[in-house]
Length: 64
Length: 184
Image 1 (cartoon, chains in turn orange, green):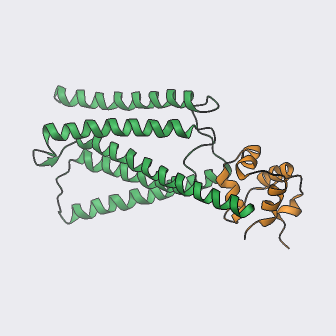
Image 2 (cartoon, rainbow over the protein chains, first blue to last red):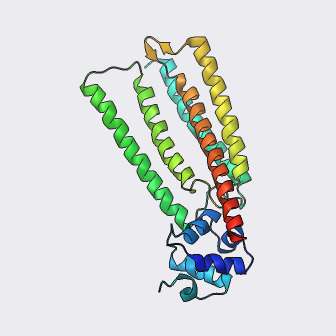
């Protein structure tokens, strides 16, 4: 399932996939895969992404 | 054992050691963090694991086919060395192509542009040496495809990798552009 909330949060911070990838220490394709729902990140990477986007884990990764 | 064979074996081992040393020096100079080792993120590590599995199954398939031909007494004009070498190349190619397609070939600290040049130059040198050897000695020596084709095979291997990298880069650029347009 696509992670549109993460995509929106990234766009709200005016960050490209490449910018966010560099901030959390992964490749741009990994960020792309997470947003597309092709890859489920580890909790460590989820936390790193949340910190950079100033969001909580629930806000970005919890599925209702 | 005659001296020519011993010399050839020593040359082969020295060649491999020299290649490893050169690659380490190149990596240390070109990697962004000065490390000789490539660093991968968590997704890339998983994909690379699958890539090695693809390589392993390719090797199994290749050697089953070789064994089948041997049982059926189907003979190919290949030396044992070339059969083993082709197995290595095909296995490596399967693994590398999988990793390139799945975006797990290049490490986070690797200077992609330098490696592309490196692959291109080394590939062309090997192609040139291989073509020259074929021109001078021909494809067959004593009815067998000679070990001289090793250079040609390595050249083709590197050029195939390079072509895949360029195709993948173009696909990525297009996808990135589409993503950016979608966000706007």
